[in-house]
Image (cartoon, rainbow, N blue to C red):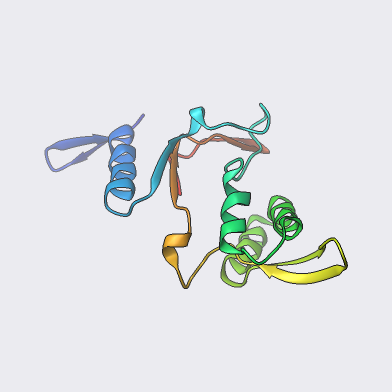
Amino acid sequence: MGQFQYGVVKINEEFFEDVVVEHLVEELGYEHLYGPDVERTDNRYRDVFLLGLLSTALQRINPALPKAAVEEAVRKLNDIDAGSLEQRNEIFNAYLQNGVEVHFFDGKEDRDDIVYLLDFSNPDNNDFHVVNQWTFVEHSEKRPDVTI
């Protein structure tokens, strides 16, 4: 863990991480989760999203859509793996801004619709989490100090 000297106060990474987490929780109302304590889908650390929370939040944000539509959106989000990191980020950014186009069977017929990831008209309807020490494996192991 590196240390930085700012004026006469030495700041290490753990202190900086704690300050960022505290600010997001206390000032902005985020929910804090400690990465190693978060339930994972397997022990290979390939999860990108918080297990169970994503589907629940998308259903709340898109109450008129059936579970099949939300499940299709989650599949699309989990399958953004084509192209460079920049291209994948562009795709995800487009999903954040415009929603995820889905094709699903509603029990009676095939339908097309859009599953929105954020509720822009009612921000309180969204979930905001800050996770520290969230391990993720893609080509190599990564563990950012803070993930929002």
